[in-house]
Length: 124
Image (cartoon, rainbow, N blue to C red):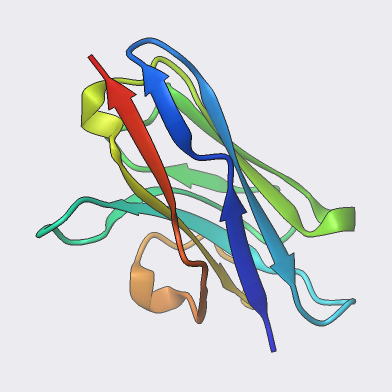
């Protein structure tokens, strides 16, 4: 069984930076492609960023490209989302998702394993 746990959310001010972490606990030898998504109430889940299982490829949503960066530490099955120059429009619950395929993938249906989400709130 694969467990995905996000951490690092919180309340920040406009212009601040924040780093989210995603820990994946599964088969010891497995490596997972990871995606980050975000969601606000009454809207669909929005693609934020994704990284391939070895970290060689990354993809970003248009709303965050140039401000956010995704990276990974494969020895620990940890993935990070560095978010810079945050604004109120970035306020959402951020979800980490994983798949045992190579990736990166932009669509929620491409991921089998999901975390519970971490709230990011950006005040103006």
